[in-house]
Length: 139
Image 1: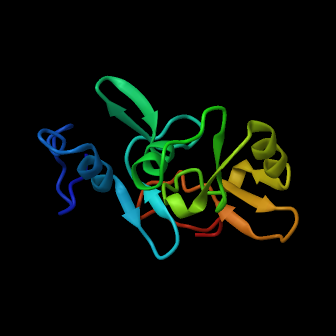
Image 2: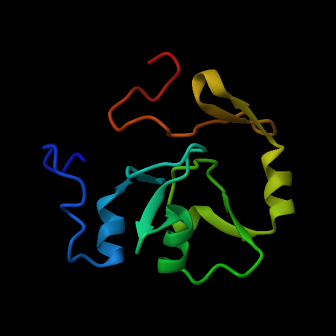
């Protein structure tokens, strides 16, 4: 694990004795728009955090910490289309059907690791890259 000072730290060294919220902030890179998760990711690009031996999606945890519990039966839609984003202002509880419907407006371009909105043409990087990597297909 890379510490805030750039030195490699043994796994878990920052986590002992810290609250869940403190652990959360150690794994977030706040930008002017998205709060990018720099901790572990699952195979689909969503941030994950382990709490008492259980894996939780980081964006769901962020919503529950900073907003309120997610209503039963609803999922969270990333309004920014960035699966690594944990900014609760970018998350909206919706039904799975609504989330799937909204997703149909995106065209995934896996070779460049981006989503392109079919309605407005804006590209949004999935942000599966490591911090410091190029942020454009040409970079």
